[in-house]
Image (tube, rainbow, N blue to C red; front, top):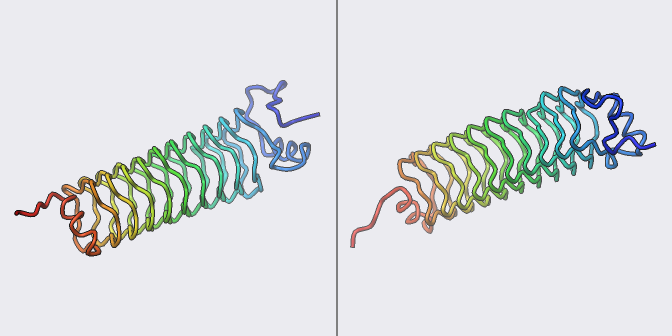
Length: 248
C-alpha cells in the first residue's frame, strides 16, 4: 500500500495533517520518498520536522507552520508557500516558481536554493542565509532583507523595487540587469559584485561598499551615494551611472 502518490480518495478536499505526513513517511520509508505534490496542506503544522528531499511541488502550504523545519533538497517548485518558514533549512531546495509573497523566511537557510521566478514580494528574509542561491527573474519588491547573506547569489534580472537590503552582504553577487529602483541598501556590501546594467534609480546606497563592483551601463540617477566606498577602477563607472559626464 502506497501513501505517497496523491492518494486522497476518502478526503479529497480536506487538508492533510501532521499525523498524515508522519504516517506517510513511515509507510514509504523516509522523507526523501514522500510525495504530496499538488495536495492541500493549508495551515498544517510541520514545524521542527525533518522533511529532507520530500516532494511538495504545486502543493498548497498557505498558512502552514514550517518554522525550524528541515527541507534541504526538497522540491517545492510551484508551491503556495505564504507560510511561516522562519529558521527553516531549505539548503539546495527547489522553490522555482513558488509563491512566497508575504512569507516569513527570517534567519532561514537557503544556501544554493533555486528561487528563480519566485514571488517574494513583501517577504521577510532578514538575516537569512541566501548564499549562492539563484534568484533569476524573481520578484522581491518590498521584501525585507536587512542583514541577509547573499554573497555569490545569482540575482540577474531580479526585482528589488523598494526592497530593504540595508547591511546585507551582496559581495560577489551576480546582479546584472537587476531592478533595484528605490531600494534601501545603506551599509550594504557589494564588493566584487556584478551590477552591470542594473537599475538603481533613486536607491539609497549611502555608506555602501562598492569596492571592486562592476557598474558598467548601470543606472544610479537620483541615487544616494553619500559615504560610498568605491575602488579606483569602479569610480568612473559610478560617476557615469549617477549622470556625471567628463568634459573633453
